[in-house]
Image 1 (cartoon, rainbow, N blue to C red):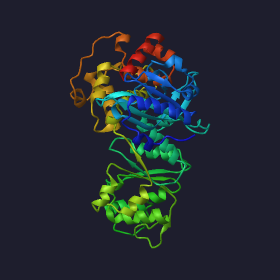
Image 2: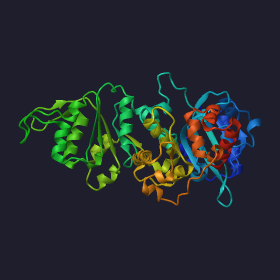
Image 3: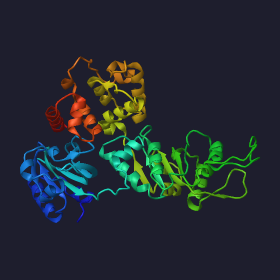
Image 4: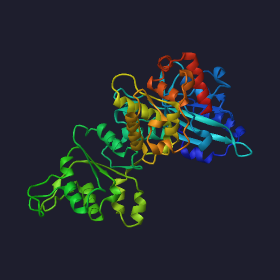
Length: 451
C-alpha cells in the first residue's frame, strides 16, 4: 500500500472543501486498505470510504451526519484531535475500538479545509492500519504504566513508540525536555525494555559535580592518584558494565571531559584517574538535557563531534503545559500509588479545573508534589481547591466547591479518566460514576462534541 507522508500534507495545505472532498475519493481508490473520511465544519462525517468500513466495521449509512468521534473511538482519549487548532495531524499513532469491540492500531493523518474567510471548513482524515502487535510486544498503555510515563496524548505516544523501537538497539539516545518532564523515566524505560535489562542502570547528573570529582565518578581512580585516594575506586563506566549509563544534563559536562567521553564512545576504552593502562567497557549511553546542544556548540561550550555521537536518536519530551489532557490521568495514577487499598480520594470539579488552569513550570514533578501536598491537607475523602498548594490556588480565580449530585459533578475530564481506567467498558465506568450507561453515553458524546 502506498504511504501518505508528511510532505504530502505539507503541499496540500489550504484546501477548499470541494478540493478536499475530491481528494478524499482519490486517496480511497489508491489506498483501499486505509480509512478515508471527511468532516464538515461541525466535525460531522460527510464521506466514509469503503476502506474505512472494512477497517473499523462501521457502515457509511449509520455514520453520515454523526460526529467523527462516533467512529473514532480512541482507546487513548475522548477528545478532539486538535485539527481545528493546528490545521493538520501528521503520523499520530492511535489505538481505536472497532465496531466489533476489537482494537485497531493506526497512524492518523489529517488536514483542515479553509473557508473563504480563512476559517475552519471541515477536514480530510486518513487512518493507515498498522501491524497487529506481536505477543511479545508490550502495548503502549502497559508500557506507559510500567514506567510511570502516564499519558494518552499523541506526543507522548510517539515517545513511547520511540522507546520501544530504540530499546532493541544499542544506538546512543539523547532525550531533550524541560526539568520535570520525566527524562530519567524515559531512560529507565529504554534500559528496562532492552536486552541489557538484567545488568545495572546507573545515572549521574553532570551539573552537580565539579570537573575533578565528576571525572573520578565517571572513570574511577586508582589508589594514590591524588591526595585522599586511599584505595581504588570503580567509576560509573565500570559499575554500569553490560548495562546502561544515563548522563543527565549532558550539556553541563565540563569541556575537558567531553574529549574523554568521546573516546569511550569511539573505542569503548577509558582511563581511570592515575591509571597507566585503559580499561574496556560495554555500556549503552543514554543522555539528556534541557538545552539545545546545537546552540551550545555554536557558543563553543560543547564539542560538535561529541554532539554527533550522542544525538543519533533524539527523543523530545513535551511540557505538561502542552498535554494538559493527561493531568486527570496522572493525578489518578498518583492517588493509586498512595492508596493501594480502599476508595481513592475524589478530586472535586473546581479543584481539577484549578489543576488544569495552572501552567506547571515544574511539569510532572511539580504536579506530583502538588498531589502529595493536597493529600496531606485534605480530609482523605475529597481534594478541594483549599487543599492545593497556595500558588495553584491563586493561579486563576477559583470557584468554590458546592454540594453537587453525582450527575452534576460529572465533567469531561472525570468521564475521560474513568472510561480510560475501565479500558473503555462503559457499563463498568457508569457503575463507578454512579450514573446509568445511557446517561454516561450522552455525557460522553456531549463532551466529545465540545472538545
